[in-house]
Length: 440
Image 1 (cartoon, rainbow, N blue to C red):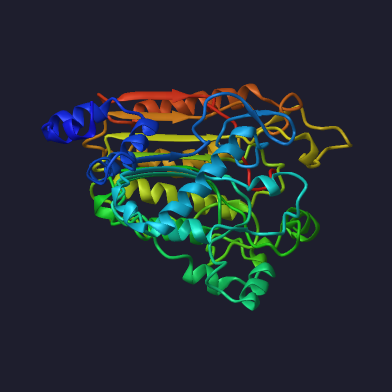
Image 2 (cartoon, rainbow, N blue to C red):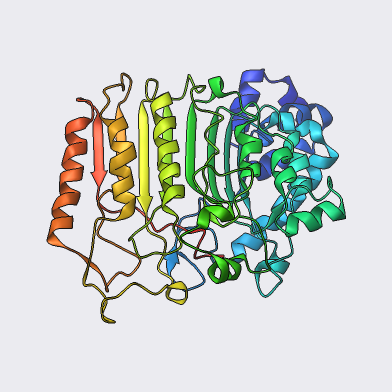
């Protein structure tokens, strides 16, 4: 069919034909004539998927353990480099033609470590994503946003701050940068899915930009805050200097300020949305949890605050939710980062008590599940509740009392939730989670 005949067809017939075209065909259509380009461009850019975090299959972390594609700190594959190159082309196009951004309705994107830094490079060097951020600012009518932060040391400030500011940022004195943050993006989004490890100011640039009353779906998938880089190796700095009895002095107590000093699961990012998401119908919260009391990298006050924040936000939206998913789980085992465990006479205890994450779930989340304020709820999925795994799997086993207590917890949830909903409670999580403590 010639282009003249195509343009003579009714608009409905043109749309039907274009529905059968993939991105490659649409791109070819755009090059045939100006009029066809104008009618095809919105369809070509409607859905932009330049991601790797939703890929199926098995990947590995640095210790060689199998992990999912969205695992922060996994080993880079060839597909990562291919998608990164395509991302660079897309960003270049959008910077040259920012008017194309208005056509995008769905954006699925993975922040990937550049190939030249994927192996053997200096981890202190920051990854400049300021051009990506500028391109994203032109996406003004997007509805669904799915972003995973798998790249280390993201820097959206590179073109907006001085070298002196960068020096202060590197030294951990980044309070001003955290307050200002990068420019807000995706104000039109009604559905958000965020995953991975990134400074909280970057998450806030998204969550603070959206109009909460328009948000219908929110998924937070194990968001981690990498903390301030007080050394080229922040984990080594942490292990060498942290005082577990006075860890609040290092800036990681329950009232986390503008910047988290130490790497930790992210918290504080939901406060802006609390009580304002009046149309939210779907909520999914997933996160890594503390497996046993001997893991010295966890700060109880911080994790209590995280679960308390989750509970408070769930309470604020439960009246409109039709679907709710909560999942907690262990990090992938990493032998190289295992820490010593308290022992009696040099012999490790054969049992561990109920996992701290389960105790926090029971303390903060269960009361919300049973408060009888779920008028619209239809589906509720709870995973990783009362699990028997721990960081020292094979060396610690739950005692019979703990097994009984975990089962009582699940029974208590079944009795507490509203009647008539489709409820799924699973002892095991569906996956292993990345950890801010173990995977940098």
